[in-house]
Length: 475
Image (cartoon, rainbow, N blue to C red; front, side, top):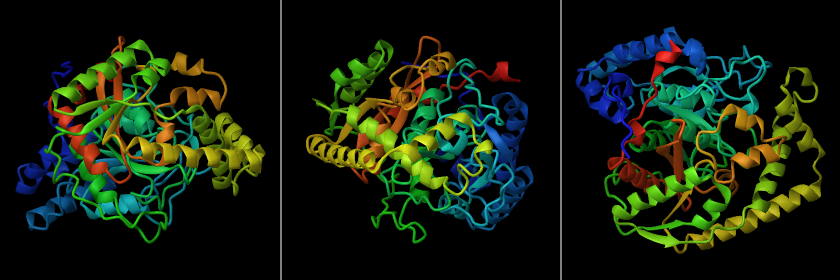
């Protein structure tokens, strides 16, 4: 099961929680840490293309201020002085926000997103903005260079938070913010061997985050360990008056019980479904995960997951209709600035009927009810991240036209955007070609603390999360 890399103990590969005590004690300088990230970006990102904008001077200024504040006893917490980055759909007043688009390529928002503002208040250093697909859908705009998977350039990075996955696994940032409408946090996390949390819908504010489909969009953290992701989630979660869809639910300390383990928890798995929809390689990875889960003292329960075909078709309808709404001020009026795949989505959204949407909403309510009944029997559910381990770009190009193409890759991710249930994705294997494979724990609404516990327990006895790519091919 071991997959550690010889460079895993280097400073750039450390976890945030291991760096924090050294930063607080003055043993490690925020400026040194930020310069390290900037140097690595300069060395590798001309090939990897994880960043669309690097805010070098702003980041160094923030790091210098953090160093002074910490030295003066004004420590803000474990993120203080830690260099991170954000997907290029989070509004940032000091850094342009391009939305993966040619139309907004030089746009600087007039206000800050709630999530990035909360990270700044916690003392995090913003290195810049990470490349994403156009309109956070499925394909990069033709004017934007697609990031490369550092585990293998012929393989998919996962979309739409593509730059986030690449930057974290390559050591070009310690954490990132991503968004997830059908799997956009979890797909790149799986392909790049990192950790992502798609929280419960309403747990994290979407204020200042450009939407793909508002009722399906989730904001969440991406990091290299479950504990680091838990730390970030605790900072960005919680009610926000600027986003009335956020839930008025108390945010626990996600780190308080993270070492409690999963002994005695009921963990469900539907191996019949997984075998029907995933490759034998992915099935084997889930069987290995369940063996670890059982060794940690959890009770394994065979479950029958609700039928997903209708819910996936409904997801495609809702995503298209809500995306058309989000772009109505610029599409079709500025359609020449749009790439072909996003244009096709918006056209479908404008063409669907009220009956199509009503059918999708009906299946959504039914599925959400079925999920609630399923979780009466279990505390956690285990599913893969992707049906294919480390898909190649050639494979992705063979999937045909949307919506069939995008649904072919998201049967284990999109359903949880539809019902809004929280999941955490963790690396658990590698494909025969060396590309990471991920799996998900799923929990009932607002039980992210349980997800963080389970993820941390898994990573305490495995080391897939320590596996890093060899970047010599990317210099």
